[in-house]
Structure formats: C-alpha cells, structure tokens
Length: 262
Image (tube, rainbow, N blue to C red; front, side):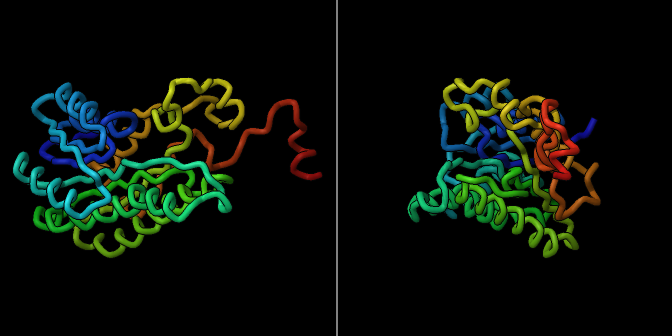
C-alpha cells in the first residue's frame, strides 16, 4: 500500500466530495491532515470523524491572509508541511456571450488564484524540509474544451499550465508538482440536489468506463502522486475520467466505420 507516514498535508475543499475522500485516505495512509473549506460545519464533522490526525480550518482560499493563517496553524499543530492538494473549486455553466466579468473573476478567484496563493504559501516550508509534493486538481475540462463552461475551462487550463511551470522551477529542489484531471465524478458539484440520474448522464456522455467516477478514485490518484511512489513524476497530468478525454464511445446502433470514413 502507498504510505504517507510522517507527512503533513493541507487539503482544500475538504468538507465533502473529492476533498473529503482525499483527507480520509491520506489519514488512513499515515499522514496528518489539515482540511480547509468554506463549509465550516461539514468540515469540522469530517475532521472530528478522522480523529487526532486531522484538523479543520475554515478559510477563503482566494486571500493571502487565509493562506498565511493556514500555514501558521498547520505548523503549530503538526510542525511541518509536506503535501498540498489544491482541490477546492466552484463550477459555472455560462458561454462566452453570457459570462459576466464579475462572475468570471469570482470563479477564477477560487479555481485559479486560490491554488496559486496556496503554492506560494507552502513553498518556504517545503524547502525547509527538503521537498514536497503539490497535487493540483484540474479537470478533464483542462484537457479539452466544453461548450457553455468557458470560465471554468479557462481556470482549469491555467491551473494545468501553472503546474508545469512550477514543476520546472522547483523540481531540482525536491518539490514535485502534478495535476489530476477528473472527469464526471459523483460529487455535490455534479449533483448538488441529488437529482441527477447517473445512468442517464453516463449514457449521454458515453464514457468508455460505462459509469460515473467516484470521489475515492480521484483520491487514490492524489495519494499516489503525493507519495514517494511517484518520486520521478513531476509536471505530469493524470486523467481520472473513465476514458472521457480519449473520446466518446460510438453507440452500437451507429456504424463506426461509416462514421469515421464518411
């Protein structure tokens, strides 16, 4: 089993969904974890259920002050920082003509500025302990475009780019930076009201895996990249999307040869 014994991780957006699954898995793998989210009640409940290896801090990750406090309180609680998982994000469904400047700025504040500030904030501490691992949760939307999600796509593409730049800048100093690109995962972001018909959505997307992904499957990818098992992986992008970035499965009712050639 991949282990994180002796490591300390900060995980954003950890009150539910992928972030919660990641916090629980990291703790099971031996790490001490600091969870942060705007959802204070839910976040505190998750941390309490994990136990002494976890702390929760409510924070708005789009501000430098919040990150200064996160770093300070993580050091006070656990003495070091080895891992950062930039998971927090918000979604938006507006095309180019409909997306307002205010909405775009609010979206990028969480999805791009927040992760950037987090990377800046943890760098000095990672350098002090001789290295670390940063996992940026981008999206399959950071590998290709999606009509009607221009602001979300912009942020996820940019996060992918920052990942590569930082990997080049700090790889020689022991800090690895990689991105994970989830596809259609069964989280509150996808289905906030619990009303989405998963089977219908899967059929519509025609994902090769034939199903929606689960938060634990994204968490397992993050665990690998955060661990020493990925010691020679830097600046990479790992799609956890059931094959969505490879394309869509052609329904059996369509002649695939005709579709390709004609």
